[in-house]
Length: 121
Image (cartoon, rainbow, N blue to C red; front, top):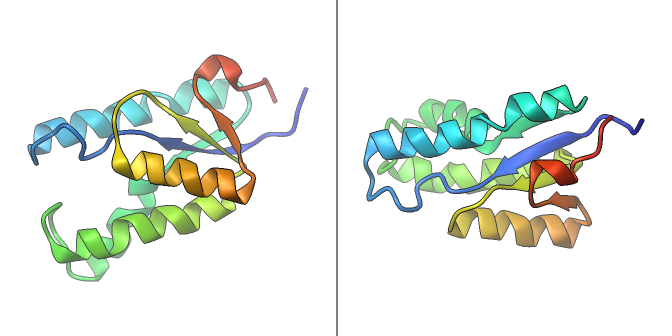
């Protein structure tokens, strides 16, 4: 048994959505769908948007097209990444997720490309 990890789930959020709220919600749901399987392995999962949206709203943002969204989404996710032990990169093209992966590698974080790579805690 290993030590429980805090794992950032990283994947497409806005990518491939053409700004459609239903498609963005579907991408978020795809990331969130990994939280329970990670939990069952003995770890805790987080998604950057869970932390970013309260900041964005408090700054005055109310949509994905707001300047506040662009100002805070990535910086919040990158601060969160500093606190995480590892990253799970889920499939799909995503500039933001690719940037998170670069930062995670530079920080020496563990990187998993699928659930099967995540060990039991």
